[in-house]
Length: 187
Image (cartoon, rainbow, N blue to C red; front, side):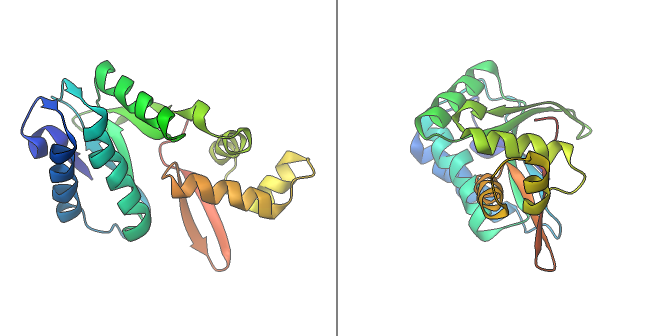
C-alpha cells in the first residue's frame, strides 16, 4: 500500500495543522484494513518541505489511528527529503517518539530503512527492537531467554507492546502467544 502525500496534499510544501488534518482524513478514507500486518507507505516524493504541525496532524495522527482502528496497518514515511526528515526528527524528539522512514522505488522496493527517533526510545525498547530483527520469531519468552538477564517475560512483553503501539514493530497473535516482527527490518 503506497499513498502519495504530494497528491493528497496537492502542494510541494506541506504546511499547517489544517492541511495535515485534510490529508489525514483523506488517508483514513483511502486506506482499508489489510488482512495481514503490513507497512502502509506514506510517500513524500515531490514534497520539498513539511512543517511539524503538518506532520503531527498527518503522519503521527494517522499512525495513532492505525494503531487503534486498523491493527494490521503500519505507517512508514517514504522518500522524504532531508528537510522533512529533520522536521520528523524534531517532532519525534519533542514527543519522545519514533517513526520509520525509508526510500521506496517506483516498483515498491524498500531501501535504506531508518528509524527516526531511535534515541528517544528507552534502552530496553532499543534492545527489544534489535532482537525483533534478529530472532526468527520474537516473543516475550524468547526475549527472556535471549537476554540472560533478570528481566522477566512480562517486562519484555511490555517493551514489545510499547513498540507495537508506536507502530515500530508488527504484532500478530498465534493462539495466546504474541509474535512480533520488524516493520521494515535492519533497524
